Length: 304
Image (cartoon, rainbow, N blue to C red; front, side, top):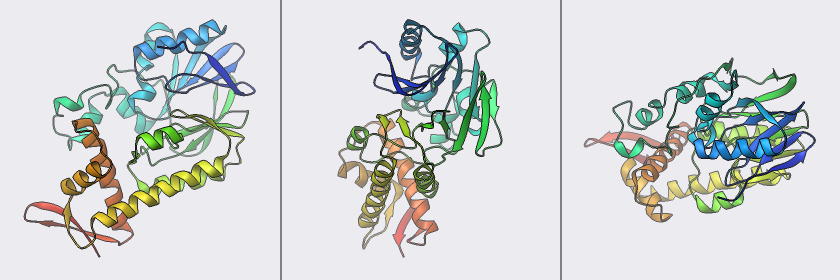
């Protein structure tokens, strides 16, 4: 793996380079990291990069519960005494209980073996020492630094973004870089309306820059949010096109989406695609574009 290093965005706002762009804010030689990477190996690389730059780690803020954002928590918590870890309450439940996400994907039944891996949930549990409640925009002080917390639901129900004193937004997975959009034609969302609301919110924040965990720093906020809105509209129209003149079950619609975009035949890809398809169906139903009915033992979607 290539060596990681710290790169400045603005002022004391940095990121740790690599496959994932991990947020780092420096104050009095103490690093506050925003998300912790996918696993212990990633956490070790982050730790080494920060230490070689002359800093020590004092706190972690998790934007949300997905394992590539909190999978390093356990390593840091084990190796740094009195480490503070922050997350919203909804995300805390999944970070602390590593069996919850796989169960949710299986309707709370015992999860399939193929969903019990680091792509679905962190493999080691960690403790959120400072839950962020209530789930609303607010200011929190960590190690003497005031951070603005902004709610950005849509990708997950309790995701947040963090605005540093340098007016830089660390956006979690609210936004993705162009290479990620090209690689993953169906972006993962659990609530389409809230996703669109979060795009509008980000566009109105008047920030100086934004760090994308999957994409690095961006500065043209209007352009990146417009790109995402276009992607949502494109996916919505594609799903409606699949439903044109026919009723399809959720499995059939998922199959058509996966075949359309050549999505790999594995249980993780299927599960994430189907979850996103369900989110779009819920959105389309709320807008009265489709009707959902159970017919012959299958839940089917039909255009109104």
